Image 1 (cartoon, helix red, strand yellow):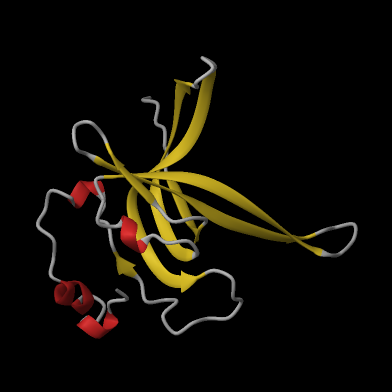
Image 2 (cartoon, one colour; image 1 turned 90 degrees about the vertical axis):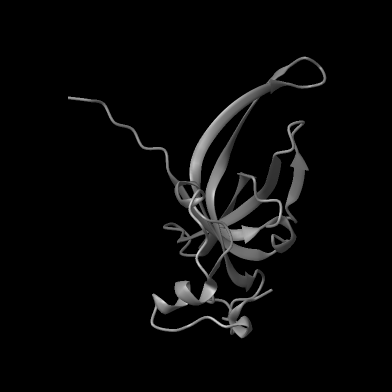
Length: 159
């Protein structure tokens, strides 16, 4: 029997800082940002609610036009894979870092901080296609909306 493995990460959280885009010597863009995800639970001993925040570093290749929309507090969906790499710091010490290499990023529209819903919190607008469909021609926005039973107009786009 063949051995199988899965390396898939899905995050829904808020950006901790504005995304930064740099370019490799070959001209390929690399956008980096961090995503905060929260976990809430009730403490068994005290009965109090507790909350914990995890920060995950994300790397997105070839999406330089997306960085302007990735601002601190923006809620988003990230799908990708875990990758661990190493490098030597300025003191010559080997440093290991694990990050999510994103295949898909979708802006969810809400800003962090409030507990209530905003009117646009669930207006999900895809801003990055999965790598598997990157070679196909993009669909017009109206065609994408019709698959959900309604057309998307300029008024629906959050930017």
